[in-house]
Length: 146
Image 1 (cartoon, rainbow, N blue to C red):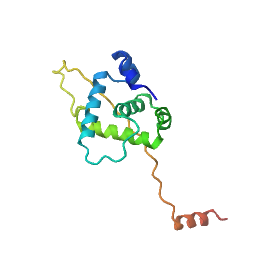
Image 2: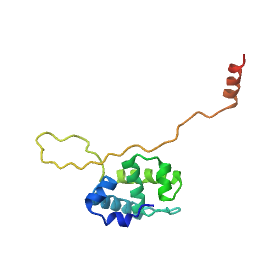
Image 3: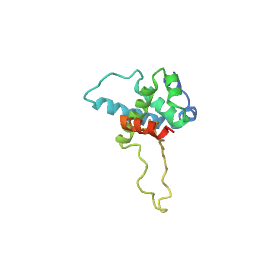
Image 4: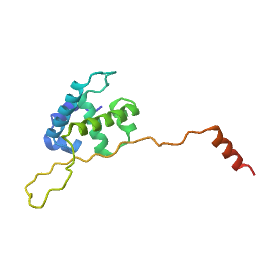
């Protein structure tokens, strides 16, 4: 499992090279996640990973485009847990309102705007297939007989 504390002690350039974001952005994400955790009414079973590790897991997924299986092996959790964590981090950061893309592009008059954009790729989702029923199975058998 990557050591998040060691990673945070690196220079900002080294941290950005590993995660794809600045440390300040990471701390903004951490603050949004902590606010969400504090506002929860029912907790349920706590995650094996702390909040910093959950954010790092999501950043690893977004940055490296590795499969959730490989990332989950690095973090010592199950693949489905990694998927849930990525989805939870995405939903929490979007709901915080701090990590949205601008709704409208600025006009050319506003040339002094300093852009800071984070683009999130979609998570892996299972393929939805129709359920097998007795009728479809019987129909398939009838079509395959000579």
